[in-house]
Image (cartoon, rainbow, N blue to C red; front, side, top):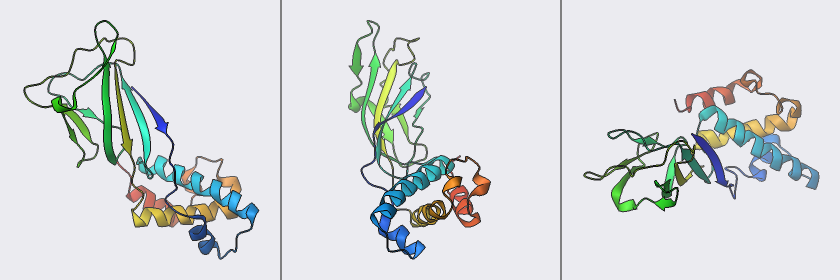
Length: 187
């Protein structure tokens, strides 16, 4: 299984002005450039810790084959916005698109699922390629206020302590930010 970002986000969940307000800063052009990078780094840190997509991005999820009958496909990045297509390699290694009328997308639960609608079954898939199934979907939600606040605080922290960005140690994050991110983690 492999997950790749197909479409990068077009906007961040917080603005430069919001982070500048936290810092009580009238940003210069150089500050705007730095804050843009710190906001992205803060969002990516928050996504890594919470295991959520906090802005809308397009993904492609590759699987070797469809699951066994009776099992569901669990999409690895919540929250799901939409499924664009489910494609698979048939026995001649030709890429086919699975008819959306034959499967159900359960987007209300976490993780979102895809399963055949009875009496349909999963299509036959050529296995062993590592890419027998590819699912194109969009995930992300940026309107969770406490996560937006955590990203603002973390971006401001990065502005004051830029050396922390290159560290993967969650212990170096401010305690309140760390607590909010861990409380919103998907297991």
